[in-house]
Length: 233
Image (cartoon, rainbow, N blue to C red):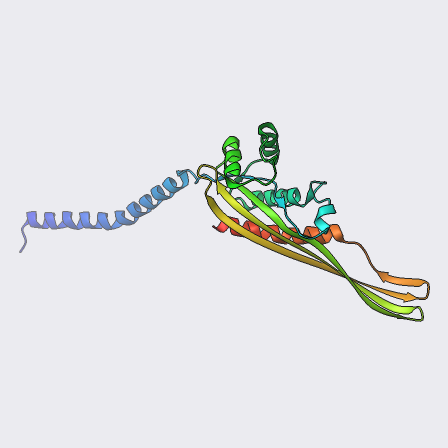
């Protein structure tokens, strides 16, 4: 038979064990809350600051040379503006305002000689205080129109097909080392068909000039491909 002292010790040990079991979930929950608070208070990773320069226009077609894209800036500037907007919407990088780039280029007289190479781009980026610079080229910016049909004794049918094709390439350059951090290529295509029926001197049907819209749609497709590649590398 246990002594009174032994009974009291056993009772005390049982109480301690019970308190430990009851306290464990509370301790675990408290620790989990502390971890969550620490994670929430941790600073968010700093986004890379990027400047997007005007793209070169190297299209071999004739359309882009006369086409006034994006408020008269030409295909190169239009693609750069579109890429800037898409990159801002993506949120992966911190994109600086293009007016700042224009001011620096004008003040420093950089890029006035033509195409901007990696070292010049890095220099522009350092002046702007960014981590990387995106340069690129519009390699295709064309609109092709095809016509077909037949007419007999003034009665006939003609069909038109407009096809817009845009291709672009881009490089992201480190402003400290002039190293190429990422490369990307994008292409887009849009088309529209029309049909005309002629009865002597009377012509019916649709035959509209959709140059601006088609080239804009193709450009958006090409730029979206650039954004996807630049942000995943």
